[in-house]
Image (tube, rainbow, N blue to C red; front, side, top):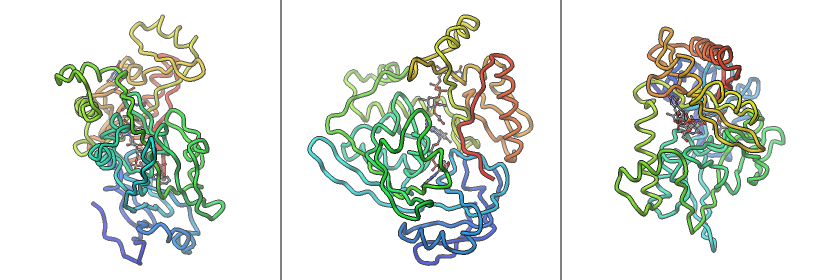
Length: 347
Ligand code: FAD
Ligand code: EPU
């Protein structure tokens, strides 16, 4: 359920607001104050509002990567801004997109306009403003590769600023902004999409899916369809069962540790990663620890994908957190690997 908000011109608010319909894990939490910002120039005014200024502020998108561990004793601020602007350049196009646009709508719109590049990232839930935070990635592509710059309100400097891609320091599920959650409010993201796309077909499953579709010479929209088919099969739908996608990151370990683990546990997938490290499959570790499909009350691990924590009904934030801790402990005991949660905790 989403409660009605009082419109104050450019922004709207509600006090003691429910967040139950605003997070895909479907945790029934509340916020002291909920503010939807519809005009980004109003941000300084909103942040100076006494009821906002006196407590913490959490920026929320669609809540598809958040675990509310309790009620939020402060302001939950949603960037509800819309719009896409197009700037043609010689060998690429620049697309400036408002933070509140839905990511998947934008990907589909860009493909429809003939702009390629984002096809592997189709069907990821959430907003455009949240995409740079953890540098969303899927099927061999990370969004940071296509980000030209972000426009944000810097709460520390109390000014609107532009950060180029290098300042964002994108890496696997990480960015500068992720480390400074109390500082940046992203208002728009500018993407640079090349005119000549480089198709990315190397991720396991894409080639097989294209073959099953009878496609020999894939175009970007074929890849998008292949990814939609793969994701629909593998991942539980948050509209059907509460979840936040992968609940843990794939652990990065030294190449030597990966080799030793693979020797002891044949079948454990490991992929070469930056700086001579290796990325392990967290899903495999959780499944091998016997937890796939396991549940404690309404908190559980999906029977479809071992990396997805699910809310079967009325699990609370603390119950989901306790179950996640149990999964971490089981994997640490069995394999000596520490799993790190992917979603952001709030409350
Ligand atoms: P939220 O969950 O609301 O917020 C996430 C973080 O971003 C929080 O720290 C929040 O404070 C911050 N934030 C949000 N908006 C702003 C803003 N405007 N300014 C500053 N900070 C902001 N992720 C992947 O990378 N790859 C996947 O393949 C993938 N698949 C998923 C599948 C499912 C079924 C689900 C439920 C989730 C999946 N995710 C995936 C995770 C999630 O979709 C992404 O992390 C997404 O970017 C979150 O967007 P959101 O708007 O819901 O952000
Ligand atoms: N696997 C299992 N058991 C399972 C599921 C998977 O053992 O139940 C093993 C299989 O060996 C499989 C391997 O794990 O080959 C990898 O599985 P998958 O291709 O589904 O990818 P993932 O590593 O589990 C990552 C991302 C996803 C992203 C997919 C596709 C992370 C934490 N997760 O999952 O992102 O969609 O790759 O690129 O990196 C998310 O971040 O929320 C998310 C869904």
